[in-house]
Length: 231
Image (cartoon, rainbow, N blue to C red; front, side, top):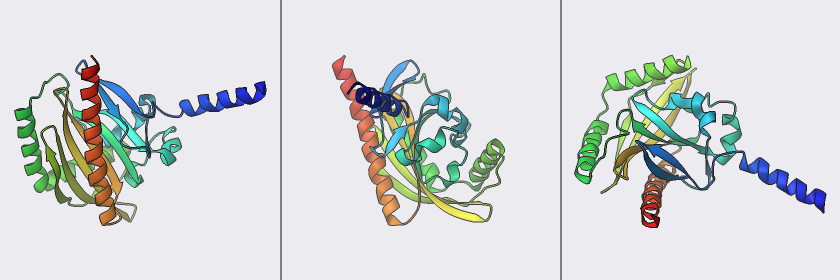
């Protein structure tokens, strides 16, 4: 019996060390504590010391705050996330560098989302080229990013705005298409960006992307409202 309890204890310890808290984590943004729940139960949060090597998925202009991968893929990332282009699904939370200390009110957030909507309607080819070169330089890769297709606004709320993009990427003669949603979210007067990326396999991929991005954004807002109430 004692031996059995020891085995159970070891198993629990092993599982608990696989990834960060399975329900939520707290990050600091400009000295403000923000609670970030996981997108859903199919994802786990990757520990910061394990995603240092995968900061390539965030543009130079952004700071990476959280990384989430599928449960089934987690073990791959313990040795470094070296191939994000071919990953089926992943999600991140980011913030524009220099904005950590800025408080954003509701009207300012509206201005930001209006600007984002106009930008994503027609993405300049120079912006695509810059992103392509930046990624290749940081990863020693040779990918080609096709012209993105705007999927339009997925949803628009006072503190949450989601926009979808579809883009093809070619590497070593292989072309894959990824659908991305970029959520702008105003939480505790900070403006964060949520990115969720999925390998495009048809309309079901877009339905999943639209649903999970809105639900996750709502969960983040609710978690932080409850945190304020408890204080």
